[in-house]
Length: 623
Image (tube, rainbow, N blue to C red; front, side, top):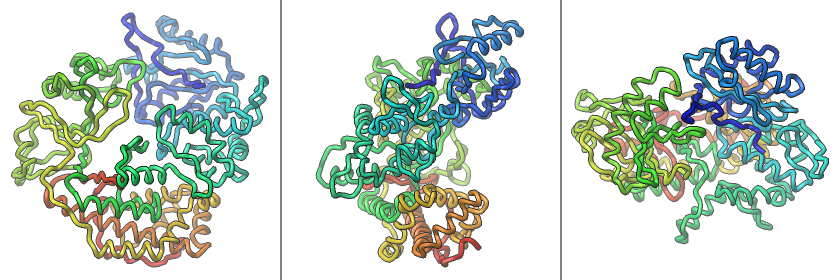
């Protein structure tokens, strides 16, 4: 059951929505205004799902304790507000099922537009907030998959998941066994589990890793995922190591590449990691994967390497199954409750204006793009292309290079290069990178785009056709292999999921990555010793003490963290050398993406440090 009713309840006489998406920065002020209008409900601390977490929200989902106020009472208070401000109450307040819906002025100002607020009446607000909580940013799955998995486990034990009350019996009485997330975690997973282990599909799977009843608990969930066509792991075979989603897909890739099989599924996540981050993600397997990716790229750079562009905004265009041309953005493409697929420039303007804020310049850009992209898209084309806008006027030429900065990265493309000549002859540049066969189809990376030439329009394909093979630095690769041979067991012991979970440090790999990213603008002379100082100010004192204890006992964990950081730096050096080889052939780019049978990774110069920074001591992190 999904208790978030959402959608567009409020529409005009022509059926067009009267609400718009709300920017993240406007959520708190709007909730503060609602709190002032409805004292005693504490709405700011009772949001549901992803309300206020994402950059924009389609509506505001708020939890209301049904014992505190009734639907009729809340409906009356909202209608009184509408009447006192000269509005028709039926235009602003609706009631349905478990909710009261309110046409809410954004930040309390009707001139800024309206967002739909859904007041959800719940009998157990803390439990429902837990069940409907947003997924961690690094999860590949949505909240509904997490809840289906929880229900699958509960079903195997004779229980069921009640989203509004707790874990219940499966008989007619539906007696609630527990509504405490920590107690439920111990019931469904193991005696040491906490609510944190129920945070996502990944954390639940990690907690079940050594459970002898694992396959029974996952049976219903596997069937659900198969019906939905979502990639997931296979059952555990008797007397074999446990499968995880990652190694299952790795095995599948191996069968595809080495045995000539046709791919039957793709990895669920489209996220592309930095090559060097793979050591933190998967230990020695990550190092081996990184080396395999580099080897494939060296053998056929042209087929495996694409340009990474940093444009803005992301635009999507194409043709419907009927052949009608469409131009929109990511929000419009995935819109629910309104038609975001604009088929005319006027419709684009209406869609943009409904979102509020000053959007005149953006509307002008889309209206300029519309006739150019429509002319470029063949009549028999079906599906949609996504790309990043790079410029809408011919970039200026400075010191022999075309210079433009569409987002964070400033590009300097030599005017005399083949790409530079094409840029100089254009006034609009778009970097295409993704295709969708239909609106609800999964994203597919593209290597070339077969469009009609249009004067002034440059569609840049990700593939670079005139490029020679690059070669990983043999000496650095040799050192990396030596680290894997001598310290591989220590690295894998450090990042062992069950050991990390037992120490309540499941996020240690992510902490390593966060720390690395925090050092982008600094020097790297003391990369590993600086980790301790960073942890002191970025985790709780209790977690800091846990980390120090974990690294110092057993001693091999200190060797593991030293080796992991050393492998990270070696991978970064190898990657940077390959990136420089590519840049010398095709200069001016932010970076590159390697898409090989062994996996995908991006080549971006994040730091710019040298080989001397690989000299790492075995420091006392607590000092």
